[in-house]
Image 1 (tube, rainbow, N blue to C red):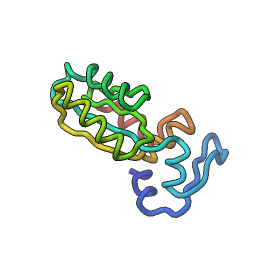
Image 2 (cartoon, rainbow, N blue to C red):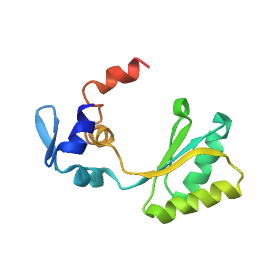
Image 3 (spheres, rainbow, N blue to C red):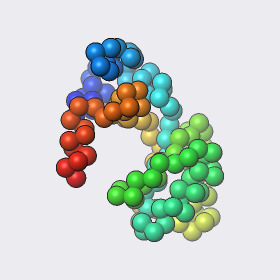
Length: 130
């Protein structure tokens, strides 16, 4: 909740880990520090997830993160919209039905987790309560 608000409202964000400032900047610059765009694929059929992740890896050249509970695979891309189009074409050619295909930037929660190695305060509790 708080990091979503910071993303929308703050001009200058400090990332603090164990009392030490480890990063500072606006939301866009912090997101660039931990990586660029990601392509996310949500599948209709959970049994397709591994095969879809393999297509995603082949096209993007990066190892996808798989979230079975949300039926999603996410991989980094440096190709932007062209990468998204290439993934869409490869998935269609392979006959995989997808529920959602999107190009997105990392969230500030993901930035915090990447920079500190720990979820933002309150996020751990939210994950455990699911």
